[in-house]
Image 1: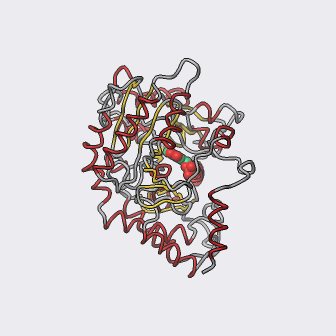
Image 2: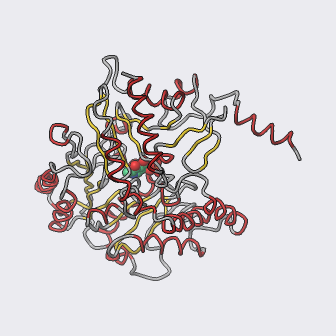
Image 3: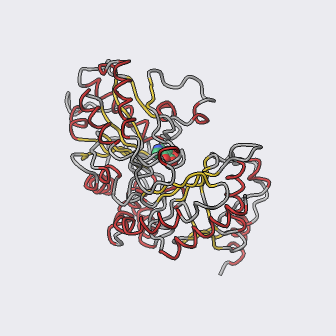
Length: 450
Ligand SMILES: Cc1ncc(COP(=O)(O)O)c(C=O)c1O
């Protein structure tokens, strides 16, 4: 046994001596590098730290590892695929697992959302959907329909398209003028009307009517698409008001505007269904997905497209590329193999139904924190929850940052924060006891940062 090599490899991971080279994403780099939160292993509901602590995952990776970590069938599928076909050209050539994965995903989507364009991330999925929307009107003889409508507090990744239709100020303000011709609807959150709501709030469907104001301003003949997250996630979990998404669909239909649901977070079970579109009984023209499609194991995203949109491109000489768009790793064999294995796990373990069963238990557990110090609001939907904490006088985000840090170091739980909001989105395999454990730990963290 070559213990020398094994030991050296382990030590490299456990005691890195240079943290400066990796400029980490969406991370307070200087604070991290002074006091790293390092993770070296994961299995099912837990991470392992270099000193051997088991830390419960309260956020499924980054809303991605819905089947839990390092699940045997998914690991085996990736290993098999790497040995069998590591890569084949994504342009002008295909491989069986790409077609199988696309068919499985299309089958899970409602209505005639029947075609899948693969990307490698949610950001690429959104930029792809926006490009398909623009090109769709172009090939349909209405190339003047170029405006894109997003929403305040929306998060659609970090590409220029995504930050343009997105509505999170810090993600936009450093990056110039962004895409031209973008407008935004108001976000749907009102603490006054919605505080401590379980599920979709009663108040707020009328906010969809703001789309009529935007149409009146620009005229529908200039508007290509509206893009929203069915449940706004990264801004701090804003479930849609009852009836809001149906109203958006009606207004888009009335004016001939494409509706895109960004389901990068809400897809694959997070809200108890394959897609939030199903939960809300609304069929958008496109759905973007990523993350949980293969439980976060291999980078993968995509856009599911309705037939009339797809078919509009399928004309002209047959040797000509219909859509001049794609990525070297679109439909990567490893990602597709991982997706097929993951979708089997979701099906075989009834994980989406499981979310529907757990939803009321989760909501009650989350709401038990409402009397704790500095808690301003708690929102829950599906297996998602958020807790707004009052900001400290010396800076927005400081209380939650300390909470995230202490949760990991002192309470063995990983939580996610945005500004002073804590978000919790555990793997769908979570047990009732583990719900209690996470909520109990988060309660202790909230007291610790009072
Ligand atoms: C709704 C939504 N869209 C897009 C993205 C971007 O995905 P990625 O980080 O894979 O580019 C995210 C990421 O959290 C998201 O929540």
